Amino acid sequence: MREERPDLGLTVSATTRPPRPHDIPDVSYHFLSEEEFDRRIERGDFLEWADVHGHKYGTLRSEVDGLMAAGKSVILEIDVQGAFNVRRIYPDAVLVFIEPPSLEVLEQRLRGRGTEDEASIELRLANARHEMDLAKDYDARVVNDDLATAVRDLANVLESYEMDGGNS
Ligand SMILES: Nc1ncnc2c1ncn2[C@@H]1O[C@H](COP(=O)(O)OP(=O)(O)OP(=O)(O)O)[C@@H](O)[C@H]1O
Ligand SMILES: Nc1nc2c(ncn2[C@@H]2O[C@H](COP(=O)(O)O)[C@@H](O)[C@H]2O)c(=O)[nH]1
Image 1 (cartoon, helix red, strand yellow):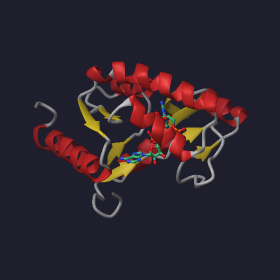
Image 2 (cartoon, rainbow, N blue to C red):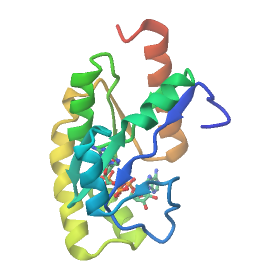
Image 3 (cartoon, protein in one colour):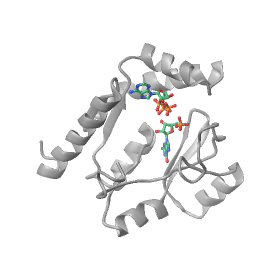
Image 4 (cartoon, rainbow, N blue to C red):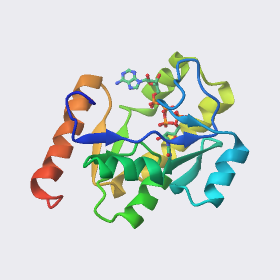
């Protein structure tokens, strides 16, 4: 995306979740201790933050401000709580719900990733069920079955909002 759509910028969130083996610090996430995350909440550093799957995740204002200053449209990859909070702050934000083809496929994918213990898988599936109930309140939905198709569908959604300012 960085090469093909230089007009778009993806924020790097902060989290207290421990890094997974393939995570790259400050690329996948800014990995913070509980103390540092709480200090940054107190300082008002977050545009939004939420407890997701038992860990804190948040969008740093500095990330959004930096991308906006560079003239980019800002993309946040965040959970439903964060999405609705961002909509309150930026009513023109476009909320796109990226969903798996089914909960069964999501479970296979999470198990296939091999990074989660049983309790975390159960928690993520229960949360996914709840999140999918809220998808109807988003502006658009993209089913992430075949990845290349999902990427194209997302690009089409973005294009439709760029073309008509979201009045479709
Ligand atoms: N289109 C796809 N085809 C095959 N595997 C996929 C596809 N999309 C994602 N995956 C895999 O599914 C697993 C779960 O991905 P996902 O991004 O949904 O996880 P997550 O970030 O833990 O979920 P959540 O956003 O609910 O916390 C990952 O291993 C990911 O590589
Ligand atoms: N409200 C926010 N949610 C966020 C943010 N960054 C990520 N997320 C969401 O957390 C879960 C778990 O992600 P994982 O990498 O541990 O699998 C996922 O739903 C993300 O969308 C954020 O800054 N704010």
